Length: 117
Image 1: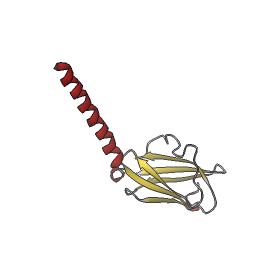
Image 2: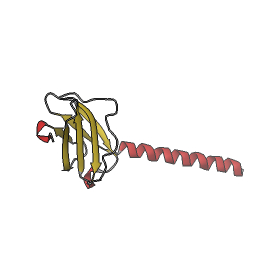
Image 3: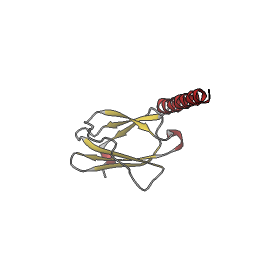
Image 4: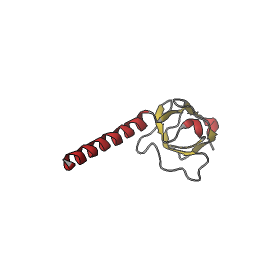
């Protein structure tokens, strides 16, 4: 009977862990980034939270953002408690940087030529 109870407890623990992962992904904050430059395709997107010293990895990976395109990103942190820095690299290698942006959950951050470094 101990083995059966032990197996049952392992299954319950596994189910609780899976529910935890699903809950985190369902309630994760998200925001949109929109390419409003008019002409330039974005090849790289980096973010940092609360003025970190590093940008981390490129969030687009092998994808690109065409002019006018809006892409949804998941935030690993609650957006209500942080400021977000953005650095975007376009097809020519030009960078667009925004520092200390407050972003609402589900909100949109528009990158324009005014953000060009």
